[in-house]
Amino acid sequence: MMERKSYLLVDADVLPEVFLRVLRAKELLASGEAKNISRATRMADVSRSAFYKYKDCVFRSEAGKQMATLNATLLDETGTLQALLAAVSAAGAGVVTINQSMPENGTARVAVTVRTDGMQMPLDELCDTLKKQKTVVDIKQSK
Image 1 (cartoon, helix red, strand yellow):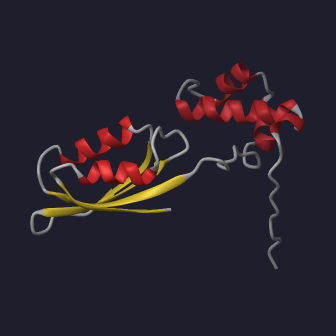
Image 2 (tube, rainbow, N blue to C red; image 1 turned 90 degrees about the vertical axis):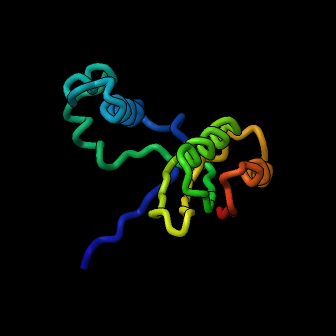
């Protein structure tokens, strides 16, 4: 029988510094700022042994990062998706994922998942703004 893992959400301020340094090293690697583990651990001031010990056990929480998905039907015209994404960005939403279907009968469906915690307007107001774009046939939000 496989042992079930248990996770805790803990305030980073109460954790030993080593965990935060491991997270920093992981972020340096992911961003490309550090090209290898040796460089990342030096930059984060953490030992390689501590990094290897904790790298698969310490993760940054996504709590508080609210997301929503915008499901749109767009006209199959050049620049349509770019215009939609520009308006999303202008509203302060961060794009997390984009999934688009093949165009069919002159339209294409696109699902854009956005991070909403930095938005300067409510999500429904963003949808109303997007509906006014001439190439947006329909748009709905889901959380």
